[in-house]
Every structure is written in C-alpha cells, then in structure tokens.
Length: 212
Image: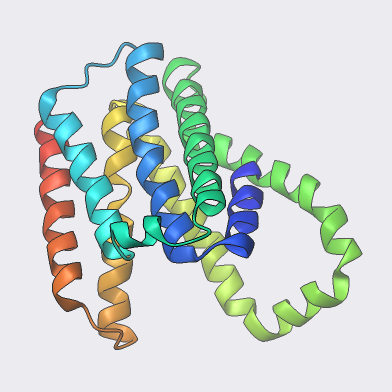
C-alpha cells in the first residue's frame, strides 16, 4: 500500500516519465544489494552488468537523462527513489516469506489482498460516489487489472521460492518492454530509434542476469 500511495503523490508533483523509471530502476538495484547483505546471495559480474543495463534501458524508454536535468525535478526524483526503496523492501520481505518461512505464494498474495481491502475500505466508503462512477465506467478494466496483477505477482513469488531474488527483481522489469511494444502495436504510439536501443539494452540485461 505504501508503494502506491507514495507513487501517486510523486505523480501529482512530477511527470510519470520521470518518477516511474527512477522507481523501477532503483528498485532492482537496491534489491540486489540487500539480497547480498541479508540472504548472502552472490551478485556476479554478469548479474551486476545486467541490472545496470536494465536500469539504463528504463531511462531510455521514458525520456533519457534530459528529464533529470529539468527544473523542478529534484522533488519528483526523491519520490521516485522513495518508491524504489519501498519496492526493494517489500521484495526482500516477500522473498523471506516464501523462501525462508515457506509461506505458499498464493496464500501470501491472498493475505496481501485482504490487507489492502481492510485498509482501503474506509477510503472507498468516504468517496463512494467516485468509486461507483469508476465501477460503472471501467468495471472490466478494473477486474482485469485486479486479476492479472495478482496472477503476475503470484508467478513472481513462485519463482522467488527457488531463485535468487537479485535475479528475479530485475527480470520483472521486462514488463516495461512488453508494455511499450503493446503500446506501439495496439495504440499506434510508435517505437522510435531510442526505444529500439532501449529494447536492445533490456534484452541484453536480461540475458546477462540469466547468465549470472
């Protein structure tokens, strides 16, 4: 929950194309560092290079380094870093839950869902008219996001049971590549030379992490 709240606050202050890549780029890097410290995972040279390539590709996908130099970018950058830290924290905690305490991934996600329901219900009741309007206009989209978001993370948790989290965290970011391709094909957003470079870097990064 904290991740979404801080992320939304960051979006109100800065551009999505600035906050999101910083959050998604720093998350895997911090996760890898914490995995080495807490779980004594071995971060090989290939893995480290792969993480850096994936982080670089995220910046390319969403505007490059020029976004970091824009006036008023400092506060959004700090929010992005905060979200990245939260991502790393919950990823490490989830790795411990499914790998060390042997909590089944499905049960863990179910408990997370119940927790979100309990926390968000008062806010939903307070803003019931907005909730009803969103449900009337976007019920299919909401249901799809709810189902596929949980399914995706259950799969990630399943992999964390036996795989190093320092590998799983950066490879999850390939969703950015898939989303960009879908936007290009389905929404005619265009891919462009910069995004081709970013896609190439991300693929190289994933291969490097896997090799590590």
